[in-house]
Length: 396
Figure (cartoon, rainbow, N blue to C red):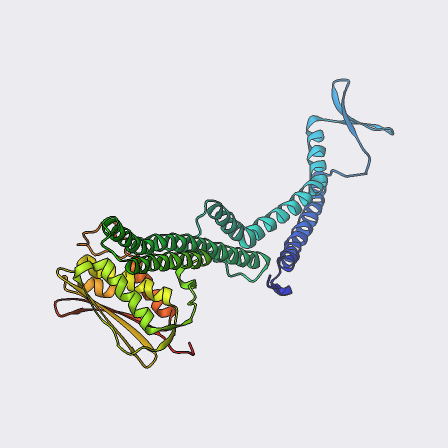
């Protein structure tokens, strides 16, 4: 907490108020004392009443009012007794007025000190405490005095800001977890579709013996590869708290092997609609093949969903950049989609598929950036084009 300067401390401010209070207190007390003494002298001179410092008691004696003490009986009339009563009131008035004046000065000083130094910050802090208790953090505590209460208000403001920050972080964490779970569910659909396609293929041809043993083993190997990839992807997604935490697992792989997986997946997802173009040259590249397949499956699934007659993939490797371009002859991207399609949970207003989560292109964008590349979207010859780039050099 910031140290308060002595000159601005509430303690020293109270001392100043007390010193200021002493001046009118002493002046007032002196005025009351001298005033009552002067009034007493004037009254004595005018009415001939003297104070001999003897205590008298008034009693009725033989039909008259008398003042009685141990030494003598003094006989007074009612008028004379009244004069003495007034005289005594004047004599002892200062004993009452001076304490009342002192108490009044102290009370007034305390009231002024409270109003000027304490009331506003206490009100601010009480109001802030109620709002924080109600989880209302969209306000600001403003009190600029450089004293202890100003420092306390500053500490409350820091606490409010931290609470607000923590709440926002918690909200973002929950939203990110929701987004991650949705992404995980979204990305499981395509591999499951591929496995389902393999299973239907085996069910159709194996019972009638229309498939060779070599082909069946090839299909089983493909299915095993998909299952292994699903296991790895599940482990990877379970290890991250948000999509931005995905870390590529770079491994050396043959480009021919990767292209074969891409082609097989495209054929299974798009069936007869699919066309592909891959480089003939085989070379070793350094890349996370599972993430590349994840992006490719999202892009080819979108193309299959929107294509009228065909979808195609064009793959190239230039200057350590693997580029996968996926085309379809559908309606293309709307202007809004070109701007926002890669944002999380974006759905085109004319989107026919109500089960579409709006996460596929967002996932692709995140993965491409994590792999040193990018995702671009554009309309191309009466359809749509989505191009994903990945860095595939040795020094990632």
